[in-house]
Amino acid sequence: MLKTYLIVDGYNIIYQWEDLNEIAKENLEIAREKLISSIQSYATLKGYYFIVVFDAYNVNDKIKQVKLENGSVIFTEKYQTADSYIEKLVYDMPKVYEIYVATSDSTVQRMILGSGAHRISALELQQDVAFIANTSMKKVKGEYKKEKNNLEKNLDVSTVEKLNQLRRLS
Image (cartoon, rainbow, N blue to C red; front, side, top):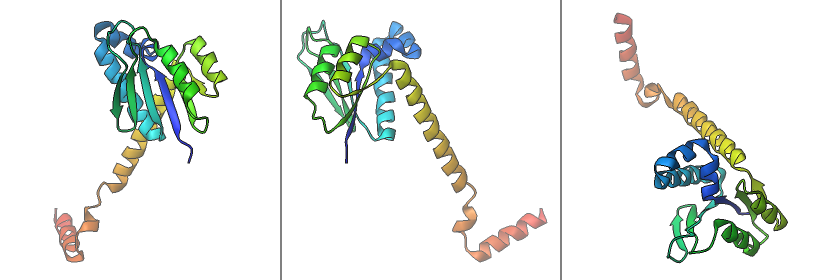
């Protein structure tokens, strides 16, 4: 079975999505957490493995990787951009995988297309995340409605009859 990867240019997406951009003006950490949460949920519903990459350009640390259930979050090493990390990652990945890169950076888009990956703009990703979340909620609500009012299925025949008699009396 073909494994599908979604690689996300973290800060590029944060600053392209209006809601995350507004949050980032107040607290960048919260904006990162919201993006990661959204991407993790989206990837789970789509069956993707995700990698969210953030620049750590002015930080003294080496590459920091946080592994999650169906993906990971990468903070690049000092003086390395997310763009260059993503470029190398896509280039080095086996071509047997289906790879999507989410960014609105035109240079990165051209590079990843040349490496055989697919590009998703920030807007396209935002729309698909919303669509998948909405579709999933509708499905959950529909299943909830199906299961609702099924007490009768769990009662024996004599109890159901007694309840019906009580209902007729009122």
